[in-house]
Length: 218
Image (cartoon, rainbow, N blue to C red; front, side, top):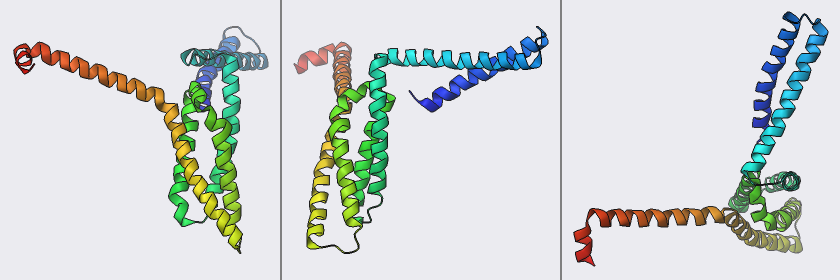
């Protein structure tokens, strides 16, 4: 659930309710000014909280998740966000032009998986290997690479380590691509099913429209 969108929706509902409650209590029920302000704030706060509960319930129902599952996923996504921030920092501190495309690809894939899991939390379960293994590996490797690449004088050993790290990052990029494919695999299967249904429907329509032609073709 988008927290910014949720905040704006709840605020746009709570503010008018608070203003209406305050004005009605002050003008029509002759409640003193300060108590009217208190009632306005209380009604606005209650509206904001109730809407939050309702929106969360609808969101969980839509994605077929329990509150416990959602808390677990949110916790892991929050931890992943910190790791992605570290990854972003280390990737763009590297000044090696030859690996620019690789670094952009890594960040693009990682952010895509995270964005999809935030939008549809149930996809998190399809990316557990990414969140519990592959993301950690790529963060550690890029931080190591960034540290070694920043050394003013590089020994043969450091240069060898940089080469090996680049090679490992190449392999990890392929693993991340597989993680992304796994996250969208259900969508791919669904799309292929829809294509098969559409082809079958088109074939049936042609047979009904040109029965004689189809008979001779057979």
